[in-house]
Amino acid sequence: MLEVQGLTCFRQNRCLFADLNFVLSEHQICQIEGPNGAGKSTLLRAILGLFRADEGQIIWSGKSTTQQAELFLQQVFFLGHKFAINSDLTPWQNLEFWSALNPTQNDDFASALTKVGLTGLEHIPCHSLSAGQHRRVALARLWLTNTKLWVLDEPFTAIDKSGVQLLQQRFNSHLTSGGMILLTSHQDLSQEFTQLHTIKLTDNTGEII
Amino acid sequence: MNNLSTSKPLSYWSAFKSIFIREIKLAWQKPTQLVQPVVFFLIVVTLFPLGISPAPKTLQMIGPGVIWIAAILAIMLVVERLFRQDFQEGTIEAWLLSTVPMSLLVGAKLLAAWFISCSVLVLITPVLALLMNIETHVIPALMLSLMVGTPILLFVGAIGNALTVGLNQGGVLLSLLVLPLYIPVLIFATSLIEAATLNMSYTGQMSILISMLLVSCFFAPVAIAAALKNTVN
Image 1 (cartoon, chains in turn green, cyan):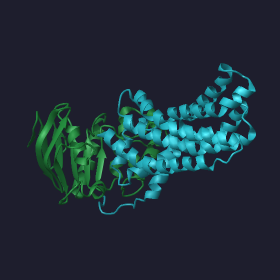
Image 2 (image 1 turned 180 degrees about the vertical axis):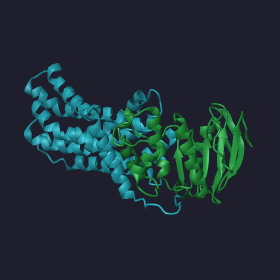
Image 3 (image 1 turned 90 degrees about the horizontal axis):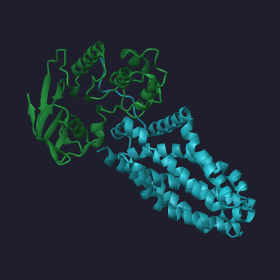
């Protein structure tokens, strides 16, 4: 269970959100909404510890994440705004190097790349792929990762309609197996998620719906 | 259905190896980055006889210093772009979120960077030494000093790069930060070569250089990891 307690973040003397509290438990998906610049990405990064929050703490299974950083990170998958795909390496090599540093269920790169529709493109450098395909390489990791909490920053950017459907199916299977998802997105999730929560970031406060 | 409890064990050694291999592969795929510092090193050294004087005596006198300064400038080129691409593409963030210690990953990258960029500089030094009319008995000392000195330059420079990689005009700040720190290395290295030229023992200077190397080997990865964490914030 992930618990956010009294999180406050400032950026360039501007308060993005103050005293934000919410809980995300197993089988739940939480969508963070808000206009551009509202602090959605900063919130995700603050939860992961990539951004230093001014106040508040993150609790993971009963303990603060700063006290058990390694244990927490072992169970988190993050897909950021920059998605850590080297454009000079091939999709296959990118997954290979990623899997050496992250907990995975298996190293079946071929089937992960097939899932995201990159069959036949496994061995060409990523810079010759389209923006959407580039993004799909990063998303292929969702079929390899073995973590409980997924933190996804705009996962649907540059992805076509069928890709969005496919991703949401993957979300659903992750949730049914006991996972949790925290994501930011400007588009509404089209599939039915029984345990969908929404956090709206407006000026200065986070409002939970 | 995936099983969230079973996972392939992660080993630090395989993570280290994988970063090392990744760097080598990347260098192989982008040979211009590999060749650029070497060509720069060669050109800078060959310009000196043309610019100052081709007289053998003069060249012999300035030779070791010129080679060392050219090596420093060539390494500045390497250092300047060391973490840039990884930072822009988000790889640094991914490393920070891995459970493998960041300093280990940085260490692997630095080791690979030394093999890729600096070892070649050391290897072509004898050719340049002949060009600069340096006596043959001084060449081993020159190579040894570069062998021990270039990793120090690389490690210290990498700290500077890690601090400035998030800035728009980081390059200028990088040279201001790093070049003063290169001065002690340059002083001891040239004093080592001078001792070798006079057929004197240079173990003293060598010990100082080696101790600088050990200190930088030990502290640089930790400092770089902290700097990158700060840059990402």
